[in-house]
Image 1 (tube, one colour):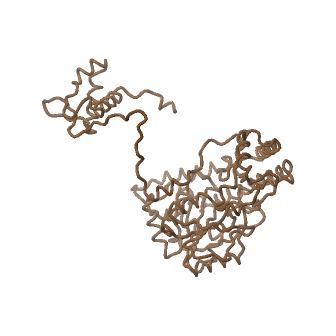
Image 2: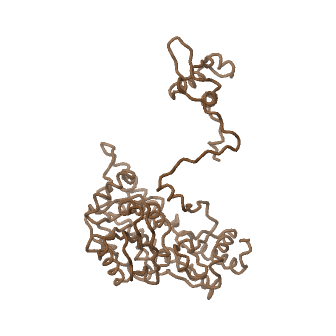
Image 3: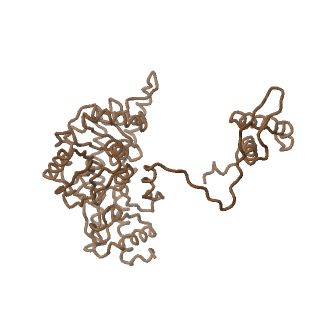
Amino acid sequence: MTEASRRPAPVGRRIGADLKAQIAQGVYPPGTAVPSSRALAIELGVSRTTVTAAYDQLVAEGWLETRPGGRTRVAAGIRPVPPPEPGEATAPPRLSAFGYRLMAEPPPEMRPGPAIDFRYGDLSGRDFPVLAWRRALTAAVLRRPARLGYDDPRGLPELRAALQAYLWRARGLRCDLDQIVVVNGSQQGIDLCARLFVDPGDRVVFEDPGYGTARRAFAAAGAAIVPIPVDAEGMRTGGLGPARLAYVTPSHQFPLGGVMPVARRQALLAWAEACGAMIVEDDYDGEYRFDGQPVESLLSLDRSGRVVYVGTVSKTLSPQLRLGYLVVPPALAPAMAEAKRLADRQAPGLEQAALAALLAEGGYERHLRQARRRNAARRAAMLAALAEHVGAAVRVEGAAAGLHLVAWLLREPAAREAAIVAAARAAGIGVYPVGPLYHDAAVRPDRAGLILGFAGSEPAAIREGIGALAAVLASGCPAAG
């Protein structure tokens, strides 16, 4: 409870609330005169002005009505609503089919992280380019337009132009300006793809294990999820059956880190063309490759307009900015723009203008070079700490790129995964199980696995956290009960 919520409501508001409750419970039936403002003020020991203001508000809301020269009365047509009997249950409101699908799988628990948190997706606040962003945002605010209104749902033209140039430079991706749609983070982009391309019952090919929030978005749209196992080269594309859409992370498979080679990419594109499917390419952290240049995008190989490319600044600047972008095949760009318009009109304009300036002046790429160096140091600290404290009892997967790795605990069975996570949290360490990311439990390895994000912590904290995790493992996890 906040300090503001503990303060008592103003006197006039309390008077109004009490009268509403009495009217709702039938103490004052419709048409009944309420006490005069003078009498009620004397009875309550407040000013008549306070009571008059409370009455005026109830008149405005339709609870009371006044007539010239007459008493203030309860408005006609209000039905008394008796309070529920103790223990009386009321039927919950009916949801749509979408709503029931949405509630079928509870969302992940949101609670404050422990002292040292290896949650994937978090970035270090120290990395955010505060001065450059403040300059860009201040300049956007000071460019006061003559008229304030809604902008193009695809995004500001200057941001789309800056993204077009950046994608060509950094990802070898060529596209027209009209193909780019700015969205509120990659998750909105994935949700818009689910709305546009998937009808209830449609088959959606999905990596297994894979990104759980994306899987929920397609499942909520009514898709029949078809899990496809992954290996060191990403999704296995041989023998894919008919489907409406495939969701893939080819440049750094989430969570296991495999990179899809050209032959598989070509096979996936041929499959999509043959069965009329769309491919959603989620390039969630393609900027981070520590042993070479970023991998070329799947979209750059597409010649038949089957790929929607999803990009974001959540892993480079901040997930709190809620800025991402789609590159959509030309024939589908108008539909995506209208879907975006109906969803929320547009992404925030000031943040778009600031990002456009950062991209155009080179500040974004300067920041990205610094972020790569810092995250390379954090990655090195985590790998060294795992080698020192856990040694041969762990096998690391997916550490060549991105901002996380998967640590397979070779001496711990999969059934112990939840207990290890709970015991680590009790010790002040946040680690996250790989098990829930598998759609088909039969294909997951029979050993515990942890997803360890390193971008949100400094090297010293990483070393301390891995040391504490090792102590938890050595103790047999007594805190897990």
